[in-house]
Length: 259
Image (cartoon, rainbow, N blue to C red; front, side, top):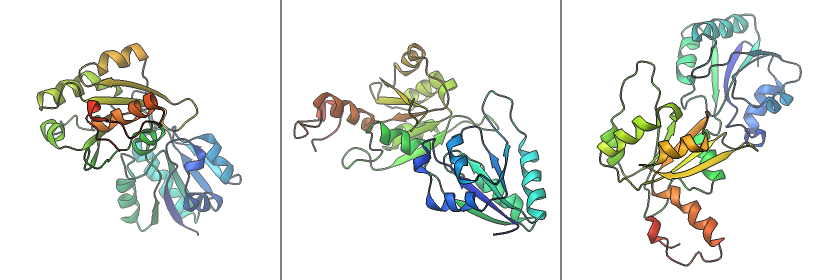
């Protein structure tokens, strides 16, 4: 496993969510370039590797992407096994695709290793099924932060009938609310805001579309956090209230059918 770059997803934070393939790559790595959101416990799998922090965080001083590209290329051309370790999944808002393309254009072998993305893990930890028969026929993952400040098609998202999972949206909660309301989404649509998905200090704030910005402010919601918007965000509230025992009773008050 020489002269190769692995673009590895470390998952949302819980080190037990790391895949076996990710562990294998880490064990054989000579160099590990690690993002800020990767749990340090993951590094137990690469005790002999050189670890280089190359963090990128919104609103914070970040390692330039061009520098990360050149550093991966330099070590790969030295015959090193390089692991670029990213939080979540490398190809879900993780720049995995562009990094793989850049390296392959320069003759470097690249392999992508999936990780569990925060939108999935955070929802699961809160007992939220992102899809549910009769309620949500799909799930849409979007980011509220774009490199060129271009706008999403909010009307399509509001009327698509899928659960929305929004990344990097904490600083734009008011804008997200306004755009979805303008697009036709119901004002009382349930919302879950999940901070530090899968970690021991994960926190969640339940709200609805109209109140989510104010509730998040009172809750002091901070990044990293994901938003789950849709009827399924009410399922966990029902489960908590009924303590599972009354699962035959109606969920219809929340827009969710009886199980």
